[in-house]
Length: 220
Image (cartoon, rainbow, N blue to C red; front, side, top):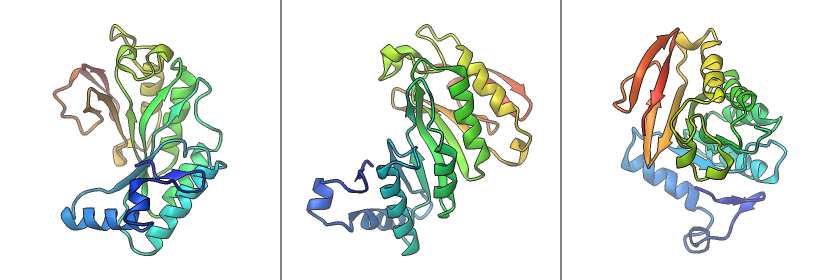
């Protein structure tokens, strides 16, 4: 969903026809249809705590949670420039998590794939106890919607880039993963490819166990 513009609901057929209560109605209807489903609000440009859109989204989640609307998590798309995450990103994740929702990085890609920027983003997730997932938005640079910016962990030929090693080192550098699983996934051609210590995806090849995590080669 991309419902917030600046600090208020943007104009859309959903707002203009059903009215401003459509978000609440959507979440309640989804919970009624499948009580076991994890219901998430996912959006872009809400990573900087000081941004108006972030504040508008926070206020929306706070409001619906306070009225018992079933929202389980908030997703942050995390399409970053070469400088990586905003300095306030951990504050953003922590403040949303304090509302009683999980937080996830859902579409991560970083211009030019700097190792330090990838490592810092992964570490930020690990630093917030309710950050439960990281999804990289593509496998090879040649598959990316930002293909000219080469923002992913594998180059156009499928070779691991330096950022891949930085992500793996960061994941294995924490001591609490045996009791806390944070999934790392890659998205390719509409498929989600999982890679975590839960194991079990036919799209992961050459798996090597390293501590609580695994080194993995993704095939897309």
